[in-house]
Length: 389
Ligand code: RFL
Image (cartoon, rainbow, N blue to C red; front, side, top):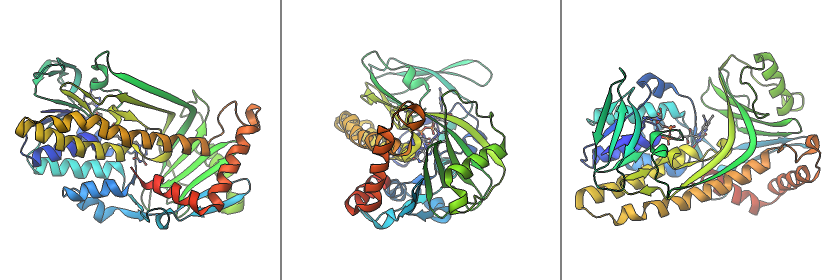
């Protein structure tokens, strides 16, 4: 069994395959230190935590994760809070940085005897319509290598070899939300004890705690915006303005240690199985980070895939593998639908708002926020979808 990629999907899958006694190797393009320090997600859904607990992979997040169940919306009309952890199904997120989760999963995998090769870039997956697929790779010194397997799991993200090797029958549904975010990681303590979503006429601003010392911020920016266009001071001033620092209190500033522009787009590959090539995580579907679903879907899919592969490899029974795609696509489309809703709630879409000329969409957003502020039924729906995958 060859697994491409050592992100949450590939490492959960690798751990479960090793636990099931299946011979597997993980091939990862990046170095170990890069994989263990790549800051991305932080909000784990209760279902994700349950999957990790079920397989003894949750020790680290039990030690270092923090329960989180409140978000605050700020608009020109004031602010309101939703204690989503007490609404809907009464479930909370666990805040645990993705790089810590990846480090835990990797340690566990190696301790269990799992094999992984870093700096090993997969170039393509071949012969996926038969029972003897193989992966071609480039060694760190540039030499080509070939890896034969019974199945190949494509967990190598949006730009990996698995996606490049899909047969023409694969359908890629793509949707561009039309907005971009400047994503920032600040060495500064969180400024509020909640996720902060500011819906401002200059664009969205977001605040998400990562740890007591580190906070993620987002600023909606124009397409093609250069990540280094603004000085740190300019960024903090803009965050202050959109988050309403004058009315609601100043943000706690600190050095910005990472910045990058994310174009909010999503896509889904259908189906997730192409003969002996199976997709999971971002390789299968990409969700815009507005609703924090990506890492959570990756973990869920990895568990479903491990179970199906174990049945296929141990007993030659492919029934679960045949169902894998349909089973996961149901979750994926639910996550896409909520992400789409959330994106519409948070953004002035260019060309649809006062700055772009139309009053209509801004008024719809205001009405949606008002409903969320006042309707218990709407709040329950939000909470259920916000923490769910
Ligand atoms: P990953 O984590 O991208 O891992 C894929 C791995 O494959 C390697 N790779 C290759 N290896 C071998 N050969 C090749 N040709 C290869 N090409 C790539 C890569 O080096 C990498 O190690 O995919 P995976 O495992 O599917 O996990 C998906 C999640 O990482 C992703 O969905 C989330 O980070 C998305 N996301 C969030 N998700 C959440 O659930 N909650 C959040 O709060 C959240 N915040 C975020 C996010 C994503 C963000 N960015 C950077 C888009 C915040 C941001 C800013």
